[in-house]
Image (tube, rainbow, N blue to C red):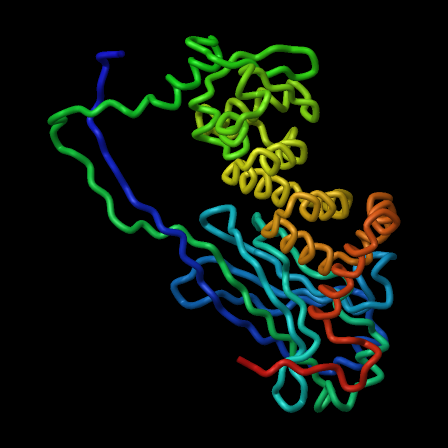
Length: 362
């Protein structure tokens, strides 16, 4: 053990959420919708006088690209921020002539805003829907767009720094020491065979960390009698990553193998690793990966991930539905198509109904 010890300091940080709402009223909107093609930007706004972050809203009357042509596109833009980046989620509504919210759409998660970066919805509402319901939606030829923003903030709770070293407590090295047992095969008492490769391990640690391994050793099974376990559904690289977590509690490189580790964590009852994999897959979520990730979440009962993916698909339905992985999912897992449709239906007002379902203003 090293004798080079330092004074200890400690701190506490709490993530809080700041919420604020901005209403943007646009005059002569019918003329804008029929005749203009360029984007329109709102005045600059913030959450309050002390907030140095500056935001704006932007609409594209006829979509922002060829795919969204025929739709009203809406975006939230971070114009300036002294501390970058800003993590925020957002929700848009149209306010009707009675002051009620309708045609609501919300972001599926927090997005990372850099300065001058925008996030929003390319296909917020069809132009023909607005024009067809012009008298109902647009009193005095105005459109009122409401945006609710939730910003994640780090607030310092309290801290303390020792002025004198006093008794110097070394950091806990338990994870490192258990990791050495695994890496160097010290004092092992069982063998795990993966793709023909043998790995020496410790029954007590396996049983303590995994209910599946515990059951193998507790009951009169072949694994308990021979202290040898054959693992047929993992590649050695994935197995090493799982075992590294099992011994140390430290997350492996999840971004390169989160999908296969999710399956392994589910099979062996490693709930914390399973949630870590869900988080990694959620952070890497994209239009191309959404359908495959939804299948993985469903197969391995990853409830938090499944909810996030369904929200993402709801917000990007037209793009996701064009991917090859979506078409594969539809053929092999039709029940997931039904769930995605249900999520979409509950999140959006049906454009075939008149009038659309209204949301009470909070």
